[in-house]
Image (cartoon, rainbow, N blue to C red; front, top):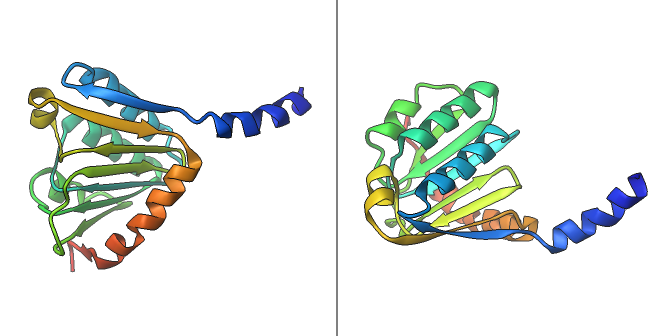
Length: 160
């Protein structure tokens, strides 16, 4: 049985899954999938977004932070939800002033990645048509994490 699992591991890495969600039609499925991944996060969650205003995702992130998962939230506009989340342990709110983000990126551990064409906002999700791409390809996730390092180094902690 173990030999079979060792053979399947490289195949699963070769056949990583990428899913496209069409909003607003598949909004509930997208939120469900993201919340499921956030609940199973073990080490860290990285979220870069122009603005963050989504109740369901916020609740999942707060639950993950209470469980011990480190959350790094980098926003252009630290108002409402992001500022409210600063009071919790394991949540690091950062402000990025260099330029306005065009879209949002959510990376959960080294296991899940979603890219959004706009801010993570409940109203935008339910009113605008957009395509959201999510993937569990470890190579793509590693590439995105390395690409975001320069952005992370220029972000300033909100509480400074």
